[in-house]
Image (cartoon, rainbow, N blue to C red; front, side, top):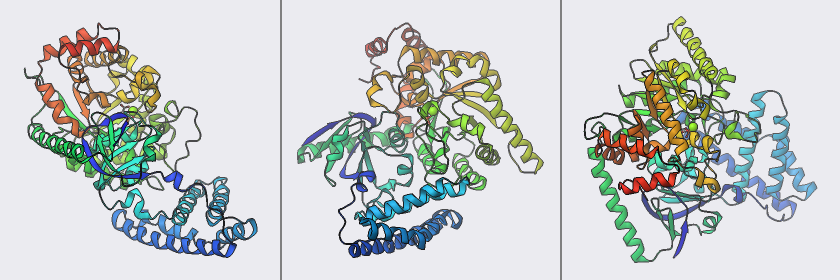
Length: 574
Ligand code: PEP
Ligand code: MG
């Protein structure tokens, strides 16, 4: 039995076979070329197979997303029939003695570079498509079938990967995923967040050794302890299976009581709502007892596709979520792209520090063609629903004002065109940049609410990359510097009569909840599976107990002192 350790990213136990996902390595090291005739024959067959794959993907996509969006796969088929491109592949094999893999890579890359050099964005996008097709053909040459990719998982597996990108998780057949183990990544990496949203056990930051596991090895993931066991003996496996089943039963019980509104034992009400990514996760959230949605991350709609979703597509997606929620609150966050979330069709350019770069509201304010259709779609979805708009990464009053001006422009266009929307739609901002936290008193009069984004606020306050496990020791929600900023934000907003929520991971952290409650947080937005335990904890405290906890914690100098104090009250988690 092998034991591997990492960061406990998403609770729960999973048992199942390993699916080793290392897409980049599968395509490395092209084979030694055989004679030209053999290599040409290999290419020809791979292209035929790629054409067949694309036909089925096209048909599946027409059913799922409609003809217009699916048409991209027809364009991919055209590349595979392009005489000039095929001639180049042939030349690489015949004149340069290349293997089939190398010939495809070189020829497609040559064409991709030519397209990329063109001014027109349409052609630059086609360069990405060419590379996609090139990878498909090379995957076939390497003997990696599409059934082995994440889209077509046919039986339940535990995904083992270096890391998973947002496009990986977007295309994954999630119903077949029992758990995640990744070599890199911290507790707020994309993989960790998605795992928690979906309630999938996960351990991240495990180191490269995890990638050496043989495909199909029986794994046990303990997402609470951050441990992964490979090829455990029968007795151990039975014990973990028993614990997994007990946990599932406990969760089912907690879920039953989680449908009551959240309140302390002396009747102080707070809202417990969920972070979601689409209509499915909205439904999951309601099942776990969410009273609404405090963060709808809209960027997932923009991932894993070849072009910006149209206003109409966005409207349909937002309206679908709003319909799941009925009259419960739905806070839709405008696009937060950049940082660790990149779009293939949006050229952000190389950045030395992407988390400090052109992302979220900064990018949207500079790109009305991206921002305004989204604002229109959100406003249209607001009719007879409790939709609220939230801007991410606001750092200055000027940014807030510019975002609000864009919203006003869009509102008058809609009104001018007789298109219905709710003119009272509330507007809030995320507080996730220290400058905004420090200027909360200045920002509060110009918004309806704040939502504290601790995932980013902690990384910017402590100057530690949220996805770098080497500096994970600094990434501490209980650091007094973080708590002081949070207190300042809540007090400033309350002085202006505005409510404050939190949609960073800290809101669902059982160690932090008593403190946040005591600081006066009004809304806690978390991943759905965390809701039942959070509501139970809130219900076990009185407001004055929580206030005393917060007051005392704020007198401490380090997170260790704060944890020691919480431990003395039986409230620390470890
Ligand atoms: C945050 O920063 O806390 C947040 C909720 O936003 P994201 O994790 O999407 O950056
Ligand atoms: Mg953020």
